[in-house]
Image (cartoon, rainbow, N blue to C red; front, side, top):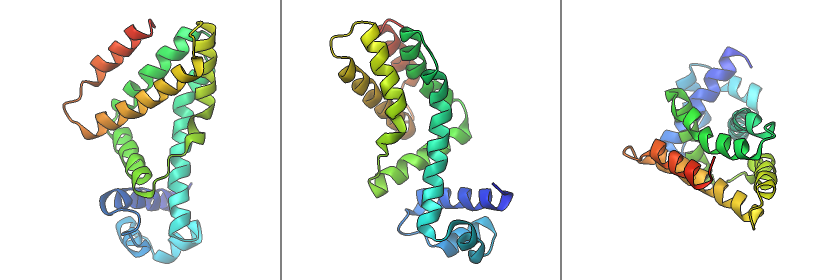
Length: 175
């Protein structure tokens, strides 16, 4: 990706979060990125192409986050790493902003993108199965839902005790 493409994506991500996807024009994105509107069309086709590039960027970053979990073979470590994953993203301000914007776009456009978590869900099901949980699929789904909720609370509620909640979950699952 070129420096200009990166500037365009960052500007679009910020504007989509600030003003909403529907209210943001490509001319506003071009002005914020300090590029011509034509450059946006050349690289991304149109506003929808720009949105798809941002969504793709989120999927790539999610894959990076999930990689260590997916390759783990110890079932307790799988669960522990998944629970601790949110801590890794909460340490870096740039990462927090990126995920906040991804969540905002997801809500505005009512796009969940459950395919992003399919691989980690399968690994969690396998871990819960190996640990002999009665309903491994439901445990995996519950943990995915809890982590999604934790991320939302962390992003929206400044006083939320993320570390305490993570420790509680690790104790609950004995990891």
